[in-house]
Image (cartoon, rainbow over all chains, first blue to last red):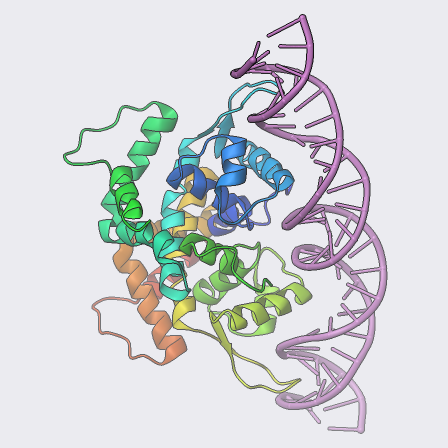
Length: 161
Length: 161
DNA sequence: GTAAGGTGATTGCTGTTGGCAAGCACTTTG
DNA sequence: CAAAGTGCTTGCCAACAGCAATCACCTTAC
């Protein structure tokens, strides 16, 4: 979107990569909703992103090094994969969610997961990032006792629907 | 900017309040640069915000409940004050800065503060939020041993200039 | 083998926002 | 009373967002 950074500030660098109304929503759906294909991302989200915006946003996130697109040709189903840089935006999403839950009206169904993440603390965030590394980067999942973090989130969400 | 929220998701709520290219930059300058007046914010930042954009952003942040403007009349110097909701965006800024420092080229001078914040952990973030509550909300500063967090940040920054 | 439907986009249109420069109405300072 | 400073507005143009339709191609069903 922009050619060169506005400054050398790390916060500004992050804002330039993530500070638009849609990029973080796409990352959220990939991480929490496990959506990896154009159509899934297009139709799955509550917010209703337009197809041209989604296309430009995916292209931008790939160029920014947060996603990788497999080499599907035109007409073939293309899969998007989170990079390590993409996975490391999870703490940003959690921080945003914490703020939103505290200061905005939100629906219980969509908030229960956020609440669980806050209660789980940094350990749960780290656990979820390990799961994403496993699913997206093929990194073996560290053995942990008990159900997966994503499984706990899903169960809590299901209990409200 | 927008009339009603796109969804009840807490992450989306935060993105709608903070997910534009300038709001977080303004908050950063108020928190880390202690800038509280239009002119300070206009001329102080590296990124060079335009005056009309700053005006609209300040108005928006006041309407969103992150800032309060004192009742200065036209021509008078108006002071902006962080609300509790505004102060609580600090963890978001830190998370963004952490990501930016890890995944983008940044200048050492502007990064040292971020590095210190990361090393200081959540305790240092909480400490800084207490200082902001003291400066902006008049809440008495809890007594802590040693120099203020903001002082440590300033000293580290000065050592590089 | 061929039609039907799915794939990730692209295009054209319109309204909104961003960025730049200048100016405004007013207060404060010297 | 002039000069400088205050927050903010206006015009202008380029870029982006949102919406609907469409494209070129692949996959599946019969």
